[in-house]
Image (cartoon, rainbow, N blue to C red; front, side, top):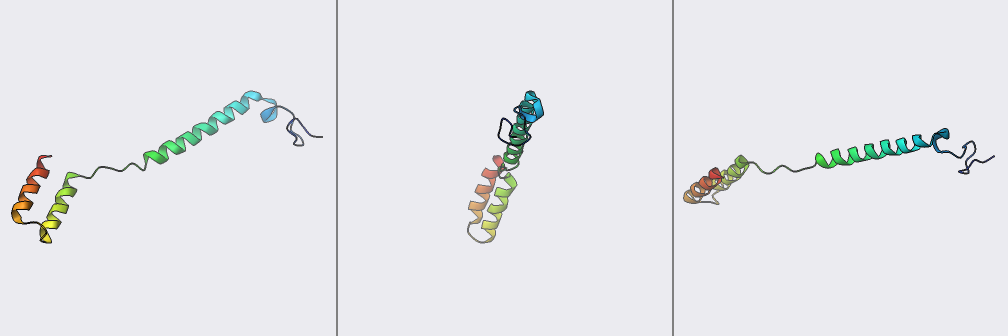
Length: 82
């Protein structure tokens, strides 16, 4: 004999005769899904570059000869004031 939903043994009410259990089950499932999405997105935020990182790049460019001494000093002063 088939129940209300067409499956053998299922009586017509969701979750074994307790309709409010179905709502609670959905609410818990949606809360878990929302938590997974929230913490998944939260962990992927990029941090802005540090000031020291910009100075490191500037020093590397100076060491490779891409900048003159005056250009290096001027740019490093600007970066240090930020």
